[in-house]
Image 1: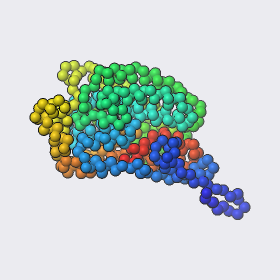
Image 2: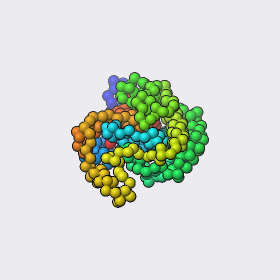
Image 3: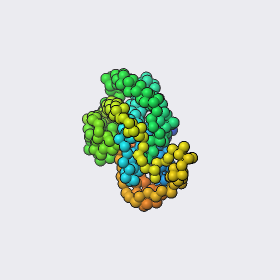
Length: 405
């Protein structure tokens, strides 16, 4: 307890220093916030980062390009396919690889499923932190369905290692498409019910409106992107401003808020889930419309960087040579410097890659949106209640794996 000296005759006040985290369940991850409280109100807060820092960037500088995906998997693990595909797109830009349209559309399906998975976790946990547990339990069955679709495509669920440089490891199965159709049919009904539980709920509105606000100017000064920036009124979206993976072939709306508070962040993510579903439906329709040989393509023709089928490795000398060169890192990377952003679930996820022509990246930096949001956490919570600090953290969707990569 710290005693504050006040003028003679005044009532003495005391503030309390509280460690919020790093292992408290309310922090939803390994975060520590040292908050100074005057009763229930936060006077100041200091963030601590680095509790699960794993030196991903330095590890990646010792690995061939195709071996870096297990690292990107473990950044934002709520939407790992977005991280993985973002890394593969970075490699393809450096290597000058043009992916077929079917690969682009399949990637959009996976990336938007990952975005929905991420947002439904974020918004349902905002509900939990306001005292409503039902919505969280209800939508989890559809996160499970998304994970089943991943499992059909790559065999994994959470850390998926999904995709390859040039496309996917294998073609999508009939079962994967059947589960996708089930999701497309059922998710709109569930999302509408989820919104009805919260959007006009008086208790939820009182807990979130005006809590943890940030202006558009302050958000831009910090470097905010993604839903947290759009909630403040700025309509920046990488998919529109710097299109990749053929996003320019689709028409969709960017949900935008006004106040940048917890309520607007909640509404923006709900709106994005609706737009993601529209993108999935449109991309799936384009995939279904493809005929002939085009309908079976799932990777670009780049044998120097794409692992050949195992059956070919056992029976064909050329495939065996390429397999050996890729696995052992014998293929040199072109010299170059590139920054490649995608619209991750939390905002602009960027990969800054420098190659000196060797077998591994010379330098590599991951632009993690969570790391940037967390710098503003002290400002967002100062003057608010302790309970508001928890719901503010949830609405920012801070993911420890991405923050501390």
